[in-house]
Structure formats: structure tokens, C-alpha cells
Length: 327
Ligand code: F6P
Image (cartoon, rainbow, N blue to C red):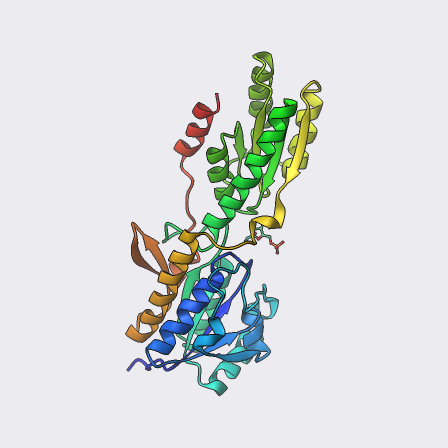
């Protein structure tokens, strides 16, 4: 017979994402509502290994729904990759009596959860928390909407100064393995071209299109580059562009970690709250080892083992839209 969940732990893992706090709040308050004991695990899986685990109460999560970052702190825990680390983590959780775990993080964190659940039978639920939106089985990930809005706010400002000087700006946004921030922010700011890790960068095509624009005196141009594009990011792209288009006044701007911080948007607070609530219900109903997502505005559950393998795909139509609209 399946064990009944009575004490649950919640942790945030991997890169932080705005809305993680809203998810933690939802987990804690839903757990307490259903009579569970809830524990906050500090610094991701590190807290399970180092026994940095604190009881959470309704008041522990007061005044956090609007805050970026994560009150539980986060880490990418190398020791959890090793069996010894996971065994230590299990022993610590068992000592407290924790028999259900909610992990808010990205695909790397889910990989850890899947292994942990398989090895020790610990019921795990994943919530997709990453600004990168690179997880299948959900239309949204917690933090993406805020990050992309932060990016467009910055890019709009860059456009003002680009316009004043008739300049080309090559702007780097986050996304080591994922082009979603580049894609969405690029379309939303009217960018000329977007370079993403999911497509091999065709530098000749970019240079050609900028030369054509130079000829017809379209001098204000924005090129959005995801940090993980295969050409090496904005600086590398700019080197070639400056060499091949010496008369175009070109500048580089790397947006960096500002995209990870800040107060979560309404959408991120909302999905984080719904997912956090649903994660606790999953544990209570015995729907173990799934990632909770939202698809077509309904809760959607993907087995963790599938969630760690699948990625969202970027269709060619997205890139076609950019080309047509940037003319
Ligand atoms: O996973 C989110 C993310 O922001 C990526 O887009 C980025 O490449 C990475 O984290 C940066 O990680 P770190 O803050 O550890 O340098």
C-alpha cells in the first residue's frame, strides 16, 4: 500500500526565478490547510545533505509573494549527483519523517528528483521554476514572464538611444541552452534578427541582411543574441559585424542577471500559486513523481522521467515572423 504523506519538504534549486517565493508560499499554506507539517529546505539539495531544514508556518511565508529571489535560497548541488550525497540526504529527511518532497527548479533539478525517487522511494513533485522556459509539459515556467518583461523594458530603453544615434545594438539576453527569452523579447521589441542556441547561427545571413538595411538607410537595428548561441554570444557576433560593416555604428549590451531578479509579474505569481497548491494535492492524492505544469490553462502532470528528457521545441514559424515583421 502507498504510504500516506504527512510531513513534506519544499526546496528551490538551480537558477532562481521570480515567482519561486510565491510557489513556496502556496506549498506551505496549502500543506498547513490540509493538516501537513511543512519544512523548508535551504539552498536546494544542499540543505538535504547538510540537514539545513527548518519548520515552516503560515507566517514564515508572509510578505514574500511579491519578492524575487527565493527565501529558501538556491544552489546547484554537485554532491547530490553522487549516490553517497543522495543517501545522506535521504537519511536526514527520514530522521525528521519527511515523506514527500516538492522541488521547484529546472530540468537539472528534476533529474536529481527522479533519481532520488527511484533510489529511495521518496515521493517527489517537480514545479517548473526557470526563466529559460525550456521544459516540456507546461505552457509556462515560473519566472519566464517576469524575465522576458525585464528584458523588453531594457531593450525598449536601448532602442531610444539607438534611435537617437542611428546605431545598431547587439543585445545579449540570458539562455545558455534556450532561446525563448531571445525569441519573445525580440518579437516584442521589433528586433531585426534573433540568434538562439536551437539554430546554428548563420553569420553570413546576418551580415547580408544588415548590409541590405544599410543600403536602404535603415540605420536603427536591434539584434538579440541568446547567451548560448553557437557563435559565442553578442561580443563574438559584434566582432564580425564591426569588421564587415565598418560604417555602421555598432554597440553591444549584455543584459545579464538583471533578468533573473525583480518582483514577479502577475502571471508568474498566479501560475506559481496554482502549481504550488496543485503539488500538495498531488502528494495527498498519491500522484507521485510528476512535474506539475499548466497546459491550455489546466493543470497538467508529466511523469518526472519524461519531464527530464523532453524539451520545448521552437518552430520555424517563429523565426519567419521575425524576418517578416523586421523589414
Ligand atoms: O537557468 C537560468 C539561467 O539564468 C540561464 O539562462 C543562464 O545561462 C544561467 O542560468 C546562468 O547561471 P549562473 O547564474 O549560475 O551563472
